[in-house]
Length: 277
Ligand code: ATP
Ligand code: MG
Image 1 (tube, helix red, strand yellow):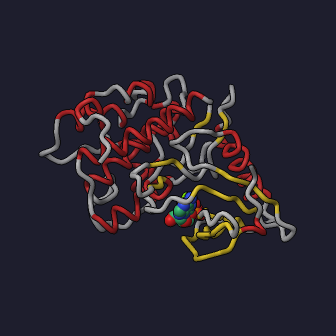
Image 2 (tube, rainbow, N blue to C red; image 1 turned 45 degrees about the horizontal axis):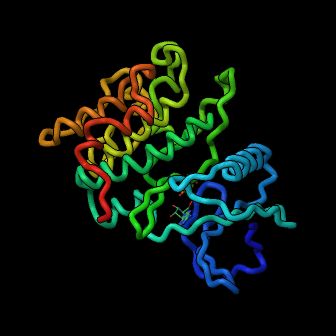
């Protein structure tokens, strides 16, 4: 059932992204709350292509671990409006800044939800390509869901190397910069696992793992650290299981990284079984 735009009333702005604005909206008859993402009708064909790709992927997905899409509208103005499931606790990024760092049991919970989403996407031949705290949404039921398919793509048999420089560079895996050294037999899905590893480390430590707290990101230094340095590691004091889990995500050689399905059976998650807290 497609939610109609004329039935929606804007309540407030939730945030601004690269190509548009997200509003909190209410359905006039059912009173249900949604998020409405308006992507400005750019004449830029790259932007338009990216939005259309996002729409196509959202239409196909049906998982409790992926933010649900309730309608897509091509407005006469050229803007594109996407009606999304409203996630009432914000992003992992805003939770980190508002509540501070996450504990190991909390991270096991977060990891399990994201891995179920990634396992669903990867089994449907979809690579997300932009896993990072601000693209992971949370609701008050403490469900964590994957959002923002702007740069994801359906895996093709052949990989177009010119197409691989998308996504938020900081979270990109070594093989996206240097496929000859770290790509093995190139497996794009493993890039999402690398990004997940960095995301979980950031939520534990409170800052991006390749930078010291407060250090300003500098693209060239960061790229060198990702490609030529050792993968970042957790500080002393974490459990062996958590350290091992992060190591399975942050193998530089992509073929050595665990898959989403394998990680769902990792001892770190077994140690923190599903709870209803
Ligand atoms: P980028 O353009 O790099 O993706 P972004 O993720 O911040 O940046 P958007 O995806 O446009 O940009 O989202 C903007 C903000 O709106 C998000 O940071 C989030 O706070 C909020 N938001 C997005 N989707 C939802 C949703 N379904 N429910 C609640 N809030 C949302
Ligand atoms: Mg986003």
